[in-house]
Amino acid sequence: MTLTTLWRALTRRWLFVVAGLVVGLLAAGAVILFSPKVYASTASVYVSATDSAANASNAYQGTLFSQQKVKSYTEILVSDRVLAPVVAQFGLDGSAADFASDVAVASDAESTLLRITVRDGSPQRAADLANAVTTRFIQVVGQLERPRVPGAPAAVSVDVVDQAQPDPEAVSPKTTLDLVVGGVLGLLVGAAAALVRSAADTTVRTSAELGAAASGGVLGVVPVDKALRDGAAPATVPAGPFGEAVRRIRTNLLFADVDRPPAMLTVTSSDSGEGKTTLVIALAAAFAPTSRVVIVEGDLRRPTIGDRLGLVSGTGLTDVLGRRLDLGAAIQTWGGGVDVLTSGTLPHNPSELLSSAAMADLLTTLRNRYDVVLVDAPPLGPVADAAILASGCDGALLLCRAGATPRDRVADAAGALAAVGARLFGTILTMAEAPRGGYDTYGPRVPAEAPRPQPPAPHSPPLGTPRPTDEPQTARNPLPDAALTRGHVPGRQPVQVVTGRRRANGG
Image 1 (cartoon, rainbow, N blue to C red):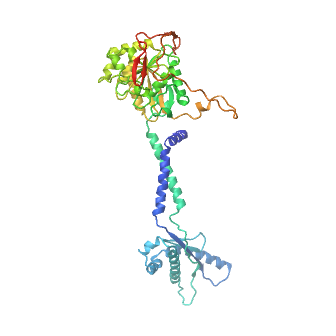
Image 2: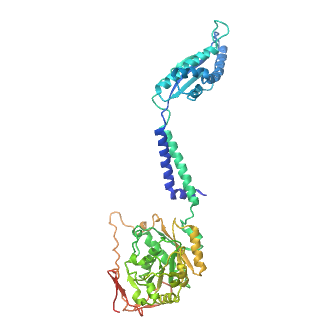
Image 3: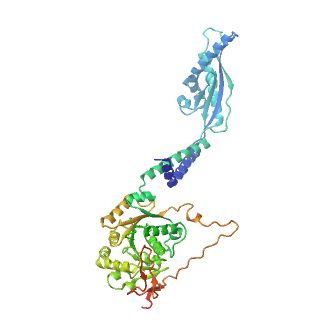
């Protein structure tokens, strides 16, 4: 795992890192808040050898003798002989061994100075205990170093250098140190959790991962558009990263296969909620200025296009297949020249209806009448409807939601298309993070003192306005070397949607 991979994993799972930091600080704060305060007080004594001879050699020997004594005195200081009387004097809870854990003895190398530190919950009592231990220690040393010859001076003397004084500053808990340690440990735990979660994450997040999972090319990456997040329908391709991604997909489709250019495509995905309907509508709006486009709602289980576009969903595809309605009467017009064939009455056998001969004949009719046919199909994971539709079209587009769809689900969806002989023209990564410094930062340079010109608002015919079909027009086929003439569609009655009802004009 490279540093770039680690950094990417941490940035994607930054909430784990932040949560670890917060938990670490809270834990440190709890320790500081609920831990009893402990104070310390230190007394120091000086150990020296007694020698009446005042010469340098004896003084040096006396210093070495005192240093050797200091090493043994550190053990005597925490012995029961020294501490037991102090415990009894102050009425401390526990034994002398328990009190020894609160007594610390320190001395520097080649030094005869001993520092006696006592810890207690009260600063005054900590000082009193340290002085009492010092006094008792001097008494014990005097008993142990008592000369055998009566009247002779003791070989070693212990003198108090500094008496212990109360220190109001608590030595535990240490607020700053505890917070720093808690924060660092929390960050480490959060980073470890982020890396583990990233290693266990099998969802597709990049176009490279999508191409590897589907074993096919990636036509584009569509970022999240805030305006479309609530289910709005783009009457025209919006500006910004989302619109540029849709236009790039349209261009890639035009050159996907020069010999067999795709004119009838099934748009599907592995699971629901991956942006199929939104992309179908946006692609239709992108093709509409130069092509005759029709959207076919192939999802006969959970249709949404009618509600998204404000069209009538009660009659449509199923009524045409059941020969209850003519194709020309069932097609509705939306936006800037996009025809829509909604789902119609929901059947109890969608798969059988989509695999019928009537559906094959309908697709052939639509292919002859339109330049681009976009079929909004249900997901491949739950049902087989999308595979049936893809087998009757030129191919399929497989969508994958970034950070939500597992790689194995994408591979299964691609395998389902291959199993029915449907061609996969490419995959599209949807709802990805918007690129930084892309479309919005590229454009003509405008002087700082001059106001930036605002583009005119796009104009599209009102919702439900039918396209004029009386005057012959030159075919607007986006595919190479296509020469068709657009005119009145035989057997079709243009439909205008007015306040939720459909009425035929010029029929």
